[in-house]
Length: 323
Image 1: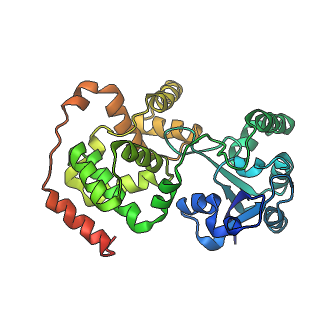
Image 2: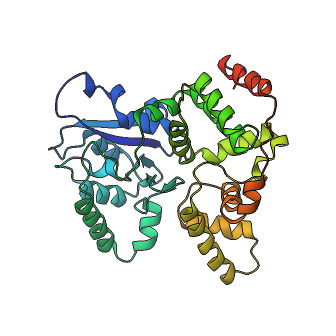
């Protein structure tokens, strides 16, 4: 049976309470991706050592069909003494499936260093792949306290996403806002009352973190299933509208459609999403398209302002554990 685990690194130069596994950012990051505690392996090491005992153990025990997931490429190369390139070669040589996430865009995606994509692109020239990774290691100069993808994810945001009840409260209010059921002022009022989110800036930041989550499209579809009357899939996105991400997907989709003219828009977009390694869906893309291209319609969308008591009842249910 194939084994699936997550791996991270925490750099600690002193033995203290902060060196406890439970206090590491790596644990919180990987937990936020849905990995269970028992499936998360974290090496807590000095920045000057190249040793990664738990990673060594995984590489020794794992083989083809098994999978190691990492929050970012920095988990390979954290620390001045890290031998990230050496470990990367060992993982690929054993035929282990390596998934590395990349949160540098507005949507979650898999890094080009994930084994599936790396082996496909460089299958005839592995030395070029290793040279590219080595150059990236040298150019980025990542240390133990910096995330490779440059995402500034506040500690409190990670904690929020890790807390199941808080997460459901936040996403319920967020999606009602995205569905134009409530105004921004009502959204901020509910967020302050139920989630301790006190400013608009904090709301945008936490929303941005949530939208990068690999499970975001699943959460969107779940809201749509339980709130079909809101018709959220047919309405433009409201928070964090990234034109860059939209046109990246659209331009590749257009090229695919020229090559395969019988494809529907949804089929060509899904192919583009896969080629760009995004972890998302056509439904997420469609709402982004409505926001970017249909500006007149976007501005005219009416906030329905449904009875706030309906939303309060829904939030009370979550507080009672009904979610």
